[in-house]
Amino acid sequence: MAAVLARITANDDLIGALADEAATVAGVSGLGAVVTSTTGTPESIWSSGATNTALASLQLTLGEGPSVDAARHGVLVLEPDLFNMPIPRWPAFASAVGELGVRAVFAFPLRIGAIGLGVLELYRDSPGSMSTAQIGDVLVLADALTSLLLRLGLGGEFVVLRTAVHQATGMIAEQLGVGLDEALIRLRGYAFGSDRPIDDVAADVVAKRLDFNDCL
Image (cartoon, rainbow, N blue to C red; front, side, top):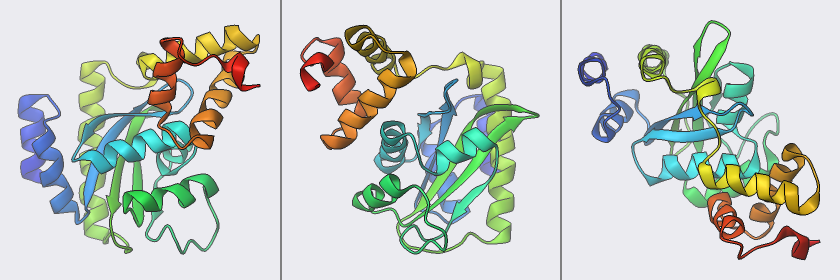
C-alpha cells in the first residue's frame, strides 16, 4: 500500500491501474472512490472496474446503501455478508446488489474534521471480513485520497449530482410543480420501478422523450 500511496502522491492524480493494485493489497475484489453531493449521494470518480461504478450508480438510483450511510454519517460501514446481515439494512439495495455479484461491501468516509468529501468503497465477490491490517491500510489510503480531493477541489459542496440527473430533477420539478427533493424521489422511484439506471431515465427526461406528467 505504501507503494500505491507514493504513486498517488507523485502523480497527484487518480490513475485507474492504481485502484486495481490497491484492491489487491486490501484483499478485495475491487475498490473505488466516490465524492458526495450536497444531498449525500455518491458519484464515482475512481474505480478499479465496472462493478464499482455500478455500485455507485445503484446507490444513486436508490438513495440508500453503504456509501450513502458512510457519507451521511461519517462512519465506517463494514458489511462482510450482505445476504446474512444480523440487522436488516438497505432493503432495496440488498435485493438488487446480488445481480452485480457483490457479497461484501466496506465503505470508508473521506473526511477532514466535520467536512465530508466522499467515500472509499471496497467490495468482495465472496463473503468475509477485512483483517485489522487490511483495514489499517485502507484507512491510510482514505487519508491520502482525502488530501488529494482537497488539493483538486473535489468533494462536498464542490460536487453536484451527475449533470443529467441534476437537469432532469429540475425539469421534473417544473413539470409536476413540486420541490427538487420530491422531484429527485420521483426520478429515483421511476428508475427503480422500471429497472433502469437513473442516468438513462434522466437522459430521457432531458431529451424530452419522457414527461413525468404522463407517468401520473
